[in-house]
Length: 409
Image (cartoon, rainbow, N blue to C red):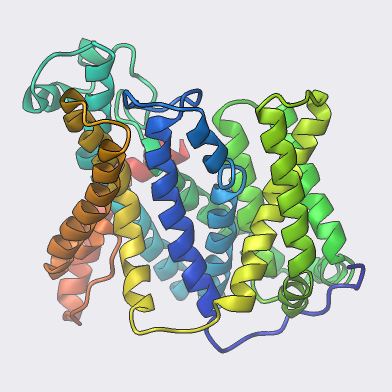
């Protein structure tokens, strides 16, 4: 594992395993958030009456690395997109297009999707006992005193909630664009050559582990997940076309799998209080598993999932809408089912099937109307005239400008 990293080579064939990883990563996120309804000790916006600590053991398989994997994949995707950008005009077009693609669905989520979660949360906490229509009329008054204790957000009481990934992805994209333009300056070339030729696979794992340890020790709250997200996004961006990295993943699949399993058992036994580990050992084990988990899943996909199917493209199209919709749907389903006391088997079964079904039906219905597709982060199908495109882009930019301003100030 000490072989030096070679010059990255461009791979023209599509990496289908990354498409599968994107689908699997976001699918696991949906199941994870359903699990949060039933976790006994982990905080969430809404809780079922049937919570259990045993759910948390299963969730610990995914918890350390699930978002880091999504960030890494996002970095890889961003690299492939940016490498196609050349002129100033294309840079401007790319930035504006990606801003619309990310911020328009976020805007829809802030005002139409996320409020459902806040309604259920405030209802369960006994803060409100009103209809959703009455709640929403109060919600759109951003200075309403009803939300005096719910003020964290983009605007007062208007929060990103589970859509924080979209907010951060847009912000990080701007950082990547600036760094990419800076890296193309001539005097940076020696530094890039040094980085490409002087980093071993083992050193990369060590470096990322130290970075996550640093953030968990010196940062607090959301700053931890934001910084870790940027670190893994940068890692995915840098390593996207590095042939040596992907080959090392494949060669070390068994070692990564064993390391992941050992660390998982260690964390589970400590979580069950079978034995007590010093804090620094437990923290180190957890953060090592985060990085090893990402690389293990990448290696597994690289080995076994590099194939295409006729439905893979459609699954990737639906990832974005399902991500936008899922958490509000599963919380509202739990909110509506709770008075029925269906039990710890029937209720989660209905929520699981209902979440996937409603996400599918809503996505199918909205994406059938071409002009509504961008509201869920799906590209339009028809090839409109230049005039219509300009009008569409202009309208979208007008809508997202206040949000963009809030996110960068």
